[in-house]
Image (cartoon, rainbow, N blue to C red; front, side, top):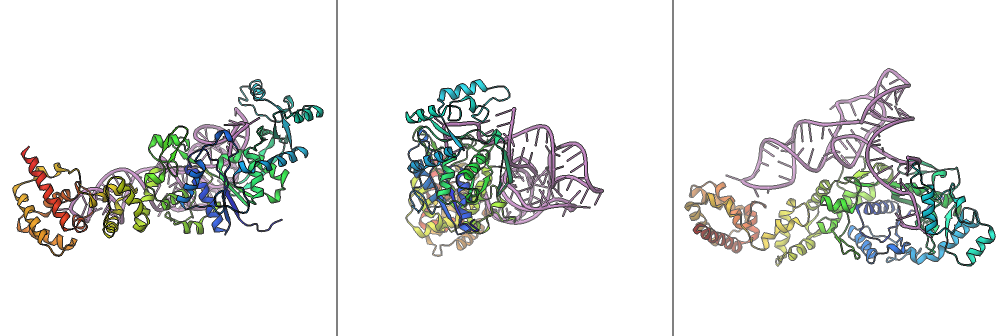
Length: 514
RNA sequence: GGCCCGUUGGUCAAGGGGUUAAGACGCAUCCCUUUCACGGAUGAAUCACGAGUUCGAUUCUCGUACGGGCUACCA
């Protein structure tokens, strides 16, 4: 009996589409647990259902893991000693385990056609039992190696008749196990059906494949979504029959992340306007584009932070965690057992906190790209960094930088003239004309001196600074937003500041004449 | 329908027989800021229900209700 098995955990997605929040959180918890215990985190691709294969989905999953910084130690592309890491490439090894189960009386061949199964469901359907299962009560009525004479079974097998292998669930046994989150969970085998283990195409189903692969890959802990809880007894039994209970990993079934009406879905995201996928997913079949958290403007640091505390906390008031802190503090026992509704407002708050917290060099490249996509070119790198520093506390999403920082590098296209015009007068016109001259002669171009000079001049003209500040802001920014006006002027530089004032004055002149 | 899991403000949640039942998001009001944010202060809002155990239950037990998941040769 291994006293301390090396920690080896895995995330096992099937490559069928976008990677949603719940999936990323499962990755996160697995990753954190592995790193905390100096263990390995493995990515295994569960592509046993060829009918659901989606090209590009696997590569997409890798990209998501890369973006979130939760990269596996072993995977189809990272390699490792327990490969191959795609179940489709492991196909040949599953059959022997299924046959072994048959030989030992724990499983059987079933020759029922899809039509026969359909008929069974119709025949056994009652009001009390609207969806009959292939279980110990119906299997005597079906065509399988338990009901057919031995000779006929052999003949069918020899003729290569299409068949599956099903687990033979005990009629009345209690299967129980300790879930690291929920404590003891138990099931009566009489209500669990005879799950197919090996499909007619020779591929294993999830149930056989997870157990075999987790064994072969020496997985020590299985953390997966709560939706797997009902099939846990099948897996427990398979472990017992195949490898003995001592080899079995420890289990934890993670609570679901809920949308407004149940399990969070892509539909919820579309309907309520928030992303559900880590990164944008382009479905090659429908060509449908679903925006992800990355493209929406989330920082990976914020994304894993908000996911970590959706269902877990360390018992203190801390909410902002770095990845390193999470590795140190995470504990699977403190994960909630109840599902958590996803709150997009709070998610944005996390991102805002991270934008403020992080060095701007941590995301300047992405912001630059966003600006360039809007036709705003960055030429002065030093100025760019200063601008980001100045406006970052006003940005909740990375995409907000376009509005908050864009005007520094490209003059506004639209001006909120209406905010100025009604109160415009000759005195202000004179003031700004003089301001231009004064600015042009200025040799101390910094926010503080600019402000003092501006106020002195206002006093000389007997105009309250407040009445002049807003017009100046509109001239430089185009609207009523942004940091302090003189900080803006400082970063804009003398020439650009003067040019924008002149331009706006000219604009005002035109409008006046209308 | 059956099985399983769950239930502390609108949301995330701490707490686990005796508490003024933390904190965060969001919301409201005020302060700061002659813009918008940040920040600060204050406020409204919670233990699903019913029994039982107990001197005392939000906390333990049992029911009920509600929510969710599963019920495929999908994962």
